[in-house]
Amino acid sequence: MLENIKKSFTESIQTKIAAAEELPESIEKAATMMINALIGGHKILTCGNGGSAGDAQHFSSELLNRYERDRPPLPAIALTTDSSTITSIANDFSYDEVFSKQVKALGNPGDILLAISTSGNSANVINAMQAALTKDMTIVAITGKDGGEMAGLIGENDVEIRVPSSRTARIQEVHLLVIHNLCECIDNTLFPITDSED
Ligand SMILES: O=C(CO)[C@@H](O)[C@H](O)[C@H](O)[C@H](O)COP(=O)(O)O
Ligand SMILES: [Zn+2]
Image (cartoon, rainbow, N blue to C red; front, side, top):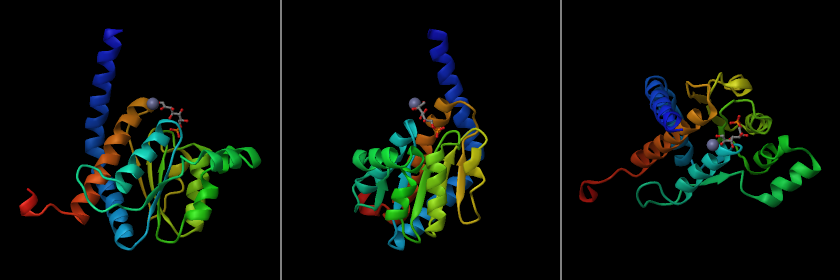
């Protein structure tokens, strides 16, 4: 057991080292897209399943409330939280539509969809991306493995941040770091620390 625990730490560290080589440019592009959208009065919708649902909510709460320091609230909505809406869409239509219907209802041109999936193959997240494109939204996709079907939906105005790993858990551990990086870029750009706050 002890050996496995140590191996997980080593694997996680190695995945982060590989991600540090490969991901900074795509994270910077995603952060710039988000900053410009927020400056323009637009919002960010987030979605994902399982651990990625948690990540979607983690990110939206850091925008709505705060990341590391107090600043004005920023507009984000996690599409994973309204159990009445989600269960009724799944019951009456299909689980594959639980996010896309909400995107069609809430998304406006200029808004961003933050779509999170380790495999890139979750049908409800893929459908949410397709719905976002019909609403003239842009997409930040956080993925892993080979990017799955989500990778094929990324256009030139969108960005995919793909963690170089094939293990769901290791990918998720980097996804959290990516999310915190995005928050940090947003806060540092929109609310820079002044000398008096230093
Ligand atoms: O957190 C974990 C595994 O670490 C699971 O809950 C995992 O998120 C679920 O199996 C998801 O349904 C996987 O979906 P995805 O990442 O392939 O889109
Ligand atoms: Zn997990």
